[in-house]
Image: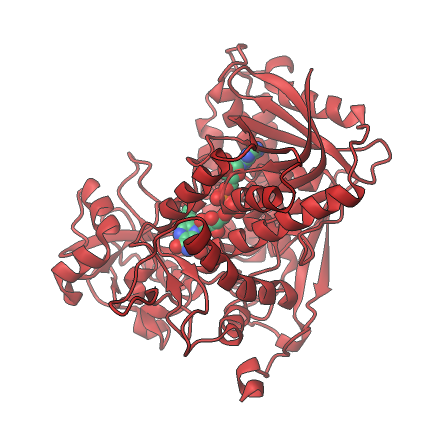
Length: 575
Ligand SMILES: Cc1cc2nc3c(=O)[nH]c(=O)nc-3n(C[C@H](O)[C@H](O)[C@H](O)COP(=O)(O)OP(=O)(O)OC[C@H]3O[C@@H](n4cnc5c(N)ncnc54)[C@H](O)[C@@H]3O)c2cc1C
């Protein structure tokens, strides 16, 4: 097997991965740094897809305390407060770095200050943006800076297993498939960053990029790490619903549309949100998605089973100017966003859950760090729009700084455990070697997964549905094991990678369903029809899931209110 060695290995090239690479390089240019990514660096992942923008307290009328309180209250008191504090404080540094060192241009006011727009669930308009396609600006600049440095790139390189050292106490490296050749490659590293970006693509309607299939979370689970808040899957209210024939269905129409005053209408063209929440369309994503789902269940829907977003009352030209990217996206699919109605549906967007980690990005496994959407605990029960890219850039940079320092002081290349390596390879070879009963298409498995997650582990849940989902997931696991791949050529075998994608998705879907079953209250993105109450905030606990002897074990752990307790506010205290 091919083997490479590096000081720092970064998995993923989104905001988290690229910031980590740049910061580690800046901290110590002598270190060898490798970024390994399932797609092409700068072209894959969700940071590139960021539309609306980046939350940061820049205006003098705003404050980091206000941003923090919005994050905690939006997260229904489940966020880890030290992580949330780090997010809001370091977001200010990162946005200056993005503008002044890395060369991003964000939109400005006539007086030269950075323009900040309204996003739902915030008490201040603090979302920095570049039009409505902010991610392209951020990722292009980050990628250029990485290309300009001596940082090794392994592209179309899929991580398949975290490999521990012989004693099991630390990370020794990562096993990959070089997708271009199909060869297995082991990369040994002193420190590894997991930044593969989660991605709830197991739902019928979803927004993330196709390369994201929860591989990082599945690997972390197999490596014995605990995942927290996994029941918290965020649905974005306005996914485009353009019919079953196009992958544009599910892609997101940005939050700023509702922030700017867009209305949601039902099939009878009536505005319904004011009946559900006093903030109407500007309520947080969880409220709006649930209200939409409830409205959809009454059958008062559009031709594709969804609802409508309407912007025309804000003025056609204004909408065209302020939301150029969204208007063009809708036009591509035959819809007139500026003057007409566009059919939308809540769409799985983001996983608040992820690997448990400390504010320095370290995890329970020595030498392994985590950042971005793979990491859990920053957002609690609900991520505010605009806090996602802030999260990945803030913690990516922290991880880069910390890893460089740690590697210099105590990092070393360790001997790996060959049994884990062999097990991982056998698992990946399964569709070629296990005398498959059928050489069927993977499409039926994917469709069943999408349906069961949307219907039973989606926006509104209950015990019976979650249990039914778990048994359907068991059956999908069996079905997948039976589905062999006819083409034995490993080079760029996309069916093989699809099979591996589904493996990760089914594994992580089970964690979401189990965590959903364990949480017998309703908070943020997790709503149980059989347990609709939020429960006392002072007794807030988060779900923590890990694998033990091949089974999932779930604990409820108390949230530590290290900065502010329910009923208090940093703002009131400050006043
Ligand atoms: C359409 C859309 C719009 C959004 N708009 C906003 C917004 O306006 N504001 C906001 O704050 N957030 C927004 N988000 C969320 C935001 O994009 C994410 O929170 C954030 O970018 C995640 O960054 P990341 O670095 O963790 O992951 P990503 O940027 O998704 O990067 C993950 C990387 O990991 C790689 N990878 C995956 N699996 C493997 C593997 N097995 N091996 C190797 N590499 C792997 C991927 O190829 C990719 O390079 C949006 C998301 C979407 C989908």
